[in-house]
Amino acid sequence: MTDSTALYDIPGPHARRRHLLYGLASTVVILALAAWILYLLFANDQFTATKWSPFLYEGIQRLLLEGLGNTLKAFAYAAVLSLVLGAVLAIGRLSEHRVLRWTATVLVEFFRAMPVLVMIFFIFVALQVQALPALVAGLTLYNGSVLAEVFRTGIHAVARGQGEAAYALGMRKTQVMTYVLVPQAVRAMLPAIISQLVVALKDTSLGFLITYEEFLHAGKLIASNLDYDLPFIPVVLVISPIYIGMCMLLSWFATWVARRERRNPKTKAVDVGPAEPETPLPGPR
Image (cartoon, helix red, strand yellow):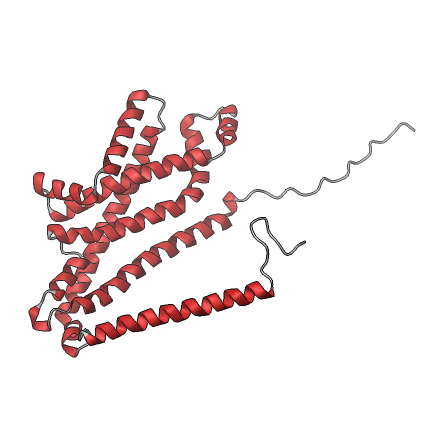
């Protein structure tokens, strides 16, 4: 064993000391920046009791909770429908039929290139759909088309020999996809899937532009209230950690699922023990 890897050498005493100095200097710069931001907030009277008093009222708290619930509702619908649409479009792109393959390709490329806000506004204004269905439809079309490419790439990432071996055993294409390719591809696709779902969660905030009463819309109502001296910064400081916490919780859930899959005995290879010596055949007497 050596003290190096294929990517880099283990740092020596001088390098470790240099890295420690870099870390201390970076910490000082970050703390100084945070202190400067806090100073500006205090100087602009962003921590006065008037600006923070709205959060003490039960009506404001109920408004925020209802907005958070509407955000989670829109995300739940969009996440499920995006996964379904992504799977359908991915199957179409992997199809052997040229018409189906090209149709799925055109849909994926079109909805991936179209801005989410434009689709939401078109569905809400031109098609006169209610706010929640319009928001969910726009998020589903965009994120579903992106997930379709994630699914297709994950299937192609599986070694070609896996599918060829399954076909050699007489399995049909549906069986090969269901029992061989997809279970192996899911582990590789999971980080990208969760990253796209995090994007969908954050994009639910676009709902306030079409008067959908989600979390950001509730914060906007509070921040524009003249009775509380326009508490924009306090609203941002309250809402932002909640959004960050929801995204981190989603990422943690993905990590937990990945670890559970690795520990699943159904996905582990069976250990092969050492071969036992053969019993000698009795010879002629």
